[in-house]
Structures are given as C-alpha cells and as structure tokens.
Amino acid sequence: QVQVVESGGGLVQVGGSLRLSCTASGIIFSVYNMAWYRQAPGKQRELVASILSGGTRTSYADSVKGRFTISRDNARKTGYLQMNSLKLEDTGVYYCKIFVRPTDSGAWGQGTQVTVTS
Image (cartoon, rainbow, N blue to C red; front, side, top):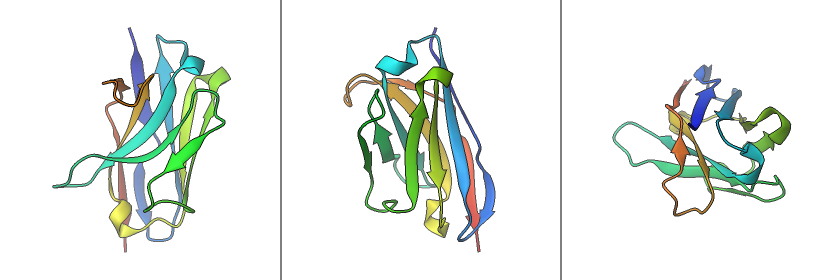
C-alpha cells in the first residue's frame, strides 16, 4: 500500500524560507516521478514543481522560478521543496504527488499548510 506523507509546513513571514518534505512508502520510490502542487483558498490546485525519477530534470511554475527548488533523495525515499523569498501568494496547502506519467492519478499525500504573513 502506497503512503505519501508531507511535512515541513508552517507559518512564516514574507521573505522567509521553508523546506517541505515528502516521504513515500510502499513503493520503489526511485522509479517514480514526483511533483509538488499547492491549493490556495478558493482556487484550483496548481502544479508548483516536478522532478523526474532520477532527479536529473526539474521544472517549475513561472510564479516560483528562482525562489523554489525541488530535489529528492532516493535512498531516503524522500523529496523536498525548498522555498525561499516567500510571498503572501505562496500561502496554501502543499501536496506531494508520486506518479509515473503526468496524466496518472498518482498517489497523493494529505498536504501540509504553508501560511505566509506580512
């Protein structure tokens, strides 16, 4: 049974940093791609960043380029999202998705709340 768990969210001021973690169990983590999504109140869930299984290729939403970094440690079955220079609009629930193809429903965690305050 696949289980995905996010952690690392919290309350941070504008300009601050947070590092989110995504730990997966029940799968061979290293063969799966991983992505971070977020959902702000009243808005649709949006793709923030993704990383291929081997960790060699990453992609980012324009809104986070240069501020967020996605990475993974396959030995630890954990992925990360380093978020720097946080803005108010980064507030939301951040979800980790483990998948093979982008169109797969994939395996999701329960989400972790990130709140950026002024």
